Amino acid sequence: MTRRPAPGTRRRILQTAARLFGEQGARAVGMQQIVEETGLGKSVLYREFTGKDDLVKAWVGELHDHAWSQLDSAIARHEGDPARQLLAIVEHAQETARTSDAHGCTFYNTSAEYRDPDHPGRREAVAHLDQLRERLRALAATARATDPGALADMLMLVISGLYANAATLGPSGPVSRSVAAARILIDQHIPAHASAS
Image 1 (cartoon, rainbow, N blue to C red):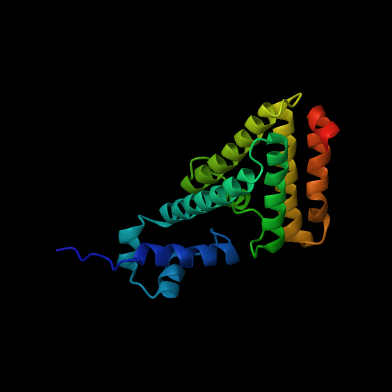
Image 2 (cartoon, helix red, strand yellow):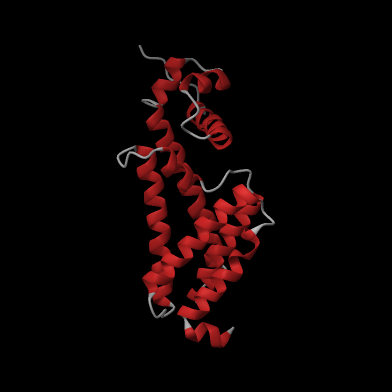
């Protein structure tokens, strides 16, 4: 009869993997290292996850859920003002980048580490970024931006740039100007917002 893993085993593995992946990059961490760090047997690890790719996918999926929960909260504070919600997304990204121990954006980093478009972790990361881009475009359209797609893409560039700059030049470098840059873009593309602000 197959032994059932202790309750919380999957959570313990994911928490350990998240810490190691965050510190060293997902690609650099081997399954044996996770076995040693958790103190669990290899068979227990492989009972929970079919392999490293499956573990990376689960990790990115969990980060996706957490990120959207936080982002939804930031957006909800400005219900009824889609232009302000756009700015709230950038404010949230800036705050996350400035206060996080992460080395840039996990979703962009995972995409860069796993270049095979069919890698499960990369697919999860790209899906998250696609969803963020679509949320920005939908808010821009609701706010009656002159070109919602263009505004969404420019804000994506601000967001990716602020994460890269926070990781390399520190939280007091160019990242400190990201919200101001986003505000300029929003005012340029949503004339009604510019006159109201």
